[in-house]
Amino acid sequence: MRERLADLGYAAGWRLVRLLPEKWATALFDRAADRVSRRGGAGVRQLRANLRRVVPRAGEAELDELVRLSVRSYARYWREAFRLPSMDLDAVHAACDRSFTGVENLDAALAEGNGVVLALPHCGNWDVAGVWLVRHVGTFTTVAERLKPESLYRRFIGFRESLGFEVVPLTGGDRNPAVVLAQRLRANGAVCLLADRDLTAGGVPVTFFGEPTMMPAGPAHLAATTGAALLPVGLWFTEDGWALRFHPPIRVPGVGGVAAATQSLADVFAADIAAHPTDWHMLQQLWLADLPERRQRVLRRVAARREGAE
Image (cartoon, rainbow, N blue to C red):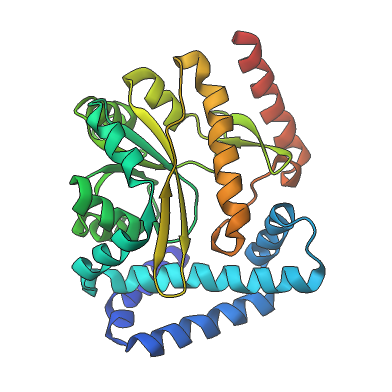
């Protein structure tokens, strides 16, 4: 029942929010975000704990404000997502053209002919970034977790495909997503992957804001096995638009370099997040210290076995 209600809620969002005048929609989402901040549910409490690591010198009053602005930023992402299919995408692309930097790093990587892996944190509005990327290089490929119910998953896939993205399901697809991504890269395509959280046995141990956590091996591993360039990407909101930075490529000298490259990704992400902390939408547990002790022990054992194998 809860999954069905969630699907209906998102369906209503895509149908109704785009009908509101922009000022009304902004005011509505800001008020809702402030209410969520004041209630301080589990996600907001975790967000506060995460931001405390990012801005360790912040006092309680400053943390209150950081949390409020971060929840507003996350609400802005959803407001824009609901409105994006009806927005003037030419105008969106033009606005991004004026504020996106480091594009020469992307162009140089594609000029080499081996494809490019764009690794992103959960920041800003990655769907708007995708709209710009489609106009700049043509379609790109990304991976989507299979949400429940299936109707909600299909709704998200339809939304992103309508913007020109190629979306590969993480599970339940006709082919292994890693195989599809490698094929796209070998055809000199672009692959975009969210890369700042992977608390599974497949994650790579990294140090992030001075504490241990895990991040996905996928971006660096794809670069190592296909020869594609690995570019970290920073995203954040501006007052009336969006900003993005394509960083210089991170070298991945074969599969043996995946761990070091993933740590380099973490370092670049940390610098951008520290500069724009309220646009990092991480309401989930990220650092190992926040996990139950039993889960921490499992991940430590997995990391130790991996290091021993290397």
